[in-house]
Image (cartoon, rainbow, N blue to C red; front, side, top):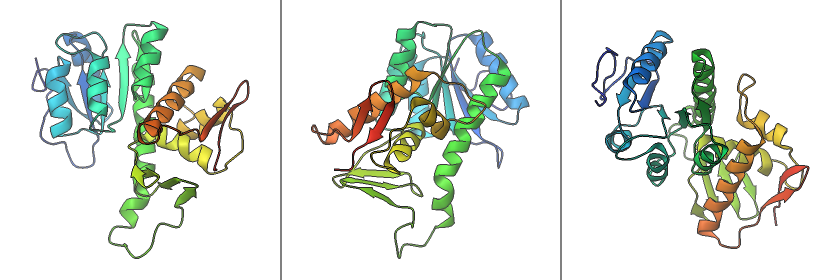
Amino acid sequence: MDETTPPPPESSPDSAPAGRHTIALVDDDRNILTSVSIGLQAEGFATRVYADGASALRALLDNPPDLAIFDIKMPRMDGLELLQRLREKSPLPVIFLTSKDDELDEALGLSLGADDYITKPFSQRLLVARIRAILRRVEVAHADATAQTGAEAAPAPDLIRRGRLAMDPARHEVHWNEVPVALTVTEFMILEALAQRPGVIKSRNQLMDCAYSDDTYVDDRTIDSHIKRLRRKFRAVDSDFSAIETLYGAGYSFAEG
């Protein structure tokens, strides 16, 4: 079974109705694919479905949806490997939807760059809320860029420069020492919250509020995992990177020097 598998009648690999977000579902459980796809279509989304990670990877890179939902345990290529390989080339928002509730799997998924994690059995209402929260963050990140189309004369007024860090929220671009660093939407918003006020300690709860909407619950491990991934990405371009500081028991801060 791949993206053309029935019964979801709108699971088209090539296009979605104008104005509708497209969600890709990757799961080897036909019942999950069917029920989630039908449920999302009822909420106004277009869907594509894939039964394994290998076939999904090619499609996600060739024709990216607006968001993808992965199971972890799948044949040929599991969800963790799929996410790892996807992140080498794409910041596509990803939610893990899986029956595996081991904390190690959750932490590993988030450390690889997942934006959220939901365990089965799950509430359709919760899933839709999480999807919409992430899509809202994506839309906010790109809204200014759309408004500034064709305006190349000057940098955006909200460009953030902190020492060797340069962030352009309008274009969702980050540079360290003038080297680009690719971040997911969640990672970008956490870093932006820290960089806006260097030296000021942000608690995990404050960072959650910056990166997630009010109708989305995440725990401390989620923020910690995103911070670890941020550090890993910056250290890939600068092994001495230490700008994101941990204040044990308090939270995190950005050191401008």
